[in-house]
Length: 179
Image 1 (spheres, one colour):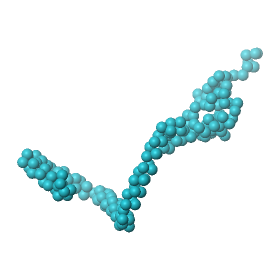
Image 2 (tube, rainbow, N blue to C red):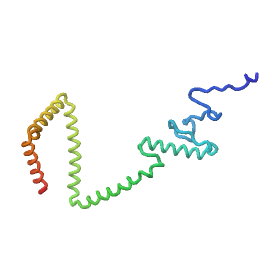
Image 3 (cartoon, one colour):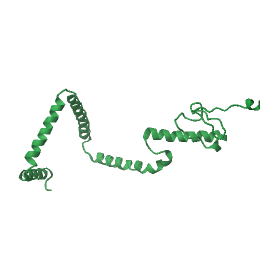
Image 4 (cartoon, one colour):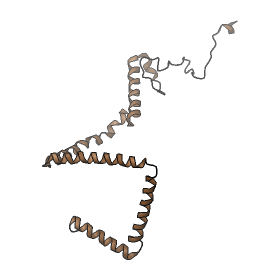
């Protein structure tokens, strides 16, 4: 009869006994931890002090969330990546100095806005043309044909290639002065 009065022990596939202790509560039911998958258990000596357990869970949650959202190193390794942040003010200072040297700020601002609008409009126009049924294929064939013609006319034979390089150097010197 002694064997029938002893409690039976059953282990399901989702829980195990470690050191003859019952399985831990799920993180969702624990008020101290954030619900995150595969968090390691807190150190055994901190079970007597709930404040250290909460601090440990918050530290792990902060590191995991930091890696998941920004794909950066955990808080312990952030000190090694801080020199990249220190370089930002130098760039800002350079931009500020260049902006201070500009005499007609209104014209430069207008040109910048016009450039952004032109870039946005041309991207919209190209995407509209790309959606037409036959146009993208025809334009691709035209581009391939022109590239072949240009290579045959200017790059295949040595005298034509030398003439082409001479024209490029002349144009370069006209634009920049002397080379």
